[in-house]
Image (cartoon, rainbow, N blue to C red; front, side):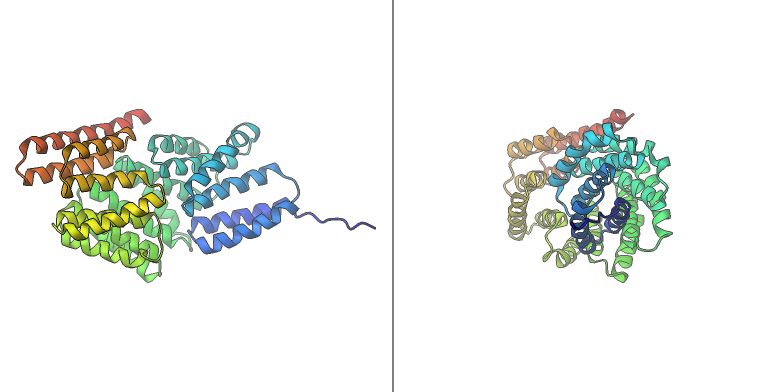
Length: 370
C-alpha cells in the first residue's frame, strides 16, 4: 500500500512567515537567515496556496534588502509585481508590495518613486492591524523624506514610529535609529546642540544594548554633524571610532566612512593619508558597483588633491543626471568654501550659486510629489 504524503498546512507556513518578518524588522540577520532556510525547506511540502507563496517572495525581497542584496530584491519585486497587483485582492499583500517597493526604490536612490510607493502603501495602512507594522511604515517613510530634505515630514513620521517601537520589547534597534533620524533632521535645521545630544543618546543606548552596528552608525553620523560645522578634529575622531566597528564587517557603512575619512583628512591638509583612504574606498566601490560613491570620491580628489575644476564639474554632472541634489548642494558648498580660502572669487561664486541651484531642485521634489 502506497504511503500517503502528509502536506504541511499552508496556515503553518504563513505563521512562520509572519515570525520571519518580525525577526527581519528587528534586524536580526543571523536568526532571519536560519529561519529563511527552514521555510525554504518546508515550501515544497506545503499545501498549495498562491497567496502564501506570493507572501514568501515579498518577505524574501525584504530580507534581501536587509542583507544589502539590492539587485536580487529588485528582481524578486519585478517578478511578483503582476501577481501582486492584478491577481490578488489581499490588502496585506498589496500593502507589502508597495512598502517593499518603496524601500527598494529608496536604496536605488530614486526617492520620488519611493515616496509614491509609500503613499499607496499608506492608503492601505488602515487595513494593517499590527501596530509595529504601522511603526515600520512610518520609520521607512521618515528616512525617505529626510533624503529629500522634507525635514518636518520626516520628523513627524519618526515621532509616530518611535512611540510604537518604545511601547514594545525587542525593537531597541529601531528606537536607536529613530533617535538618529531626529538628529539628522536637526543637523539640516542647524540645531547643532540638539543634534549632538540626540546622537550621543543613540550611541549610549546602542552601547548599553550591545548594538554594535547601531553604535558605529551613531559615531559616523555624529562625525558628519561635526564635519558640517567644520569641527574637523572632532569629526575625524568619530570616523576613526566608526572604523573600529566596521573593519571586520564590510557593508554600506564602510564605504561611507572611508569617504568621510578621506574628505575630512583632505580638509585638514593631511593629503597623503587622505589619498590612502580614498584609494581604499575606490577599490571597495568598484568591488560592489557603488557608482555614486565612486563619483563622490572623484569629486573630493579633483577639489582637494589634484585641483581641477573641469574634472570636478564633469563628475558633478553625473550626480546631477541622477538627481542627487543633496549631494550636489553639499559638495558645491564645499567647493565654494575651498576656493574662497584660495581667494579665487570667480570659482567660489560659481559654486555658491551651484549650491543654491541644487537646493532649489530639492524644493522642486516637493512640487513633483504634490
